[in-house]
Image (cartoon, rainbow, N blue to C red; front, side, top):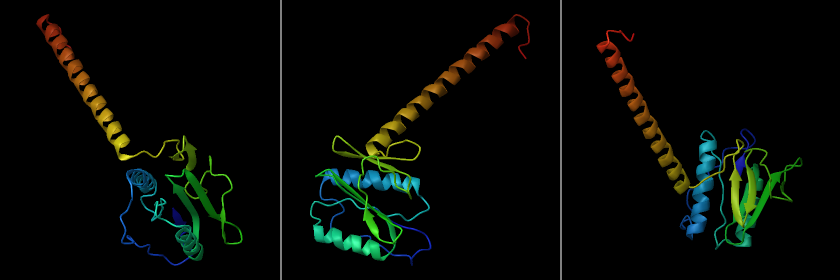
Length: 179
C-alpha cells in the first residue's frame, strides 16, 4: 500500500494494470479484495493505493517499487506475503527517506490509523474504530443477518399493531373509546 500526502508532490497516476492477472491465486485475491475494500470504505475521498505481494514478485521488483515510492513522496508502504506470512512496513522518516518498521505486529499506521497484526499466519487489519477489515463473504453474511433481524422486527411491529387494533375494537364494543 502506498500513500501520498496531499500537497507534498505532484499527483502520480499509478497504472491500473501491469498486463498480468490481478491475483495469481485465491488466497492473494482474498487479501487484495479485503484490504482494498476496507481501505476504499474508510477513505472514499482519498486515492490510496496498496499492494499485495504476488508469488511471482521478485526482490528486484519490490526494490524497484520501493524506490519509485521513495521518489514520489509516498508516506507509507506496506507489503504482505500471504504465502510466506511476512508483513513489512516502511514509513517516511524526518530525513525524507522510507525506513523499515522494525515490528509490524500491532503496528498502527500513522496516516491511516489502521492496526496490522498477524494471527495464525494470517493478516488482520483493524480499523481505528476496532472493526476488522472483512471480505465479501463476511459482509454478505452480516447483511443477510441484518436483513433477517429487520424483517423479524417488522413482523413483530405488525403483530403488535394488530394486537392493539384488536384491543381497541374490544374496548369500542364495550362502549369505551380507546383514544
